[in-house]
Length: 276
Image (cartoon, rainbow, N blue to C red):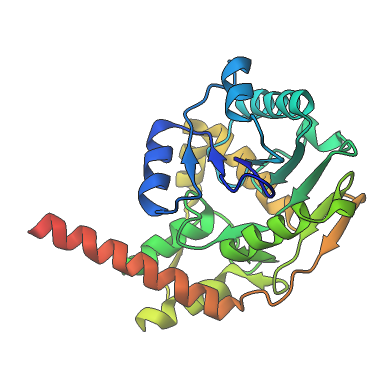
């Protein structure tokens, strides 16, 4: 995402056509301008970024990022940032590979790296927590490929956006690594318990059997690599990162209530449309 914090109040967003159309539908704001861009076309990027103050680039916030595509995107963002003199903010999520080469890079004085805990919220799809929430909303058991008792940090997506914006608006924050803080560690079982209270049904957890694990590992080896890195990543942000404790983070229970209510509206709407 390319966003101006000053002067020109128009954010831009690059992405697939489907994602861009969904974003345009969900955000009816005169401050949003959608641009279809190709990271392999420097002229397109430079033209779209004209007049931009800050470029935001989010990677590994969900499962759908590929290392080679991420590398290409980051290099394109750095190139455009340097060419137009814009600041660069890179936000990295927990689904990044543990041995990701980008992790060794130190931000230049005009950029910063922000590490985020796993995001949750109606808009934070294609994550482990979102998969579990869909099952709970649909009244189905949740098959967990990880240990639900492990405690880790989670962050409500609205809070994450606010914290990133606050850091990006702070001149002294550039040139360093930061990690965002939520409301402290909590297990997935506890977090999903809050979701179950909204629909007044306790979540049902089912473990994946050994033969299913072997089948999945054979069929989708990259998934198990990601799950392994997800398990080990936890709160490992690197020794050079500084904690950012935003003001008034959304309590887990409140965040899950808001998330589940939105998902219930979407699910009920889909069912009603199908039956009609």
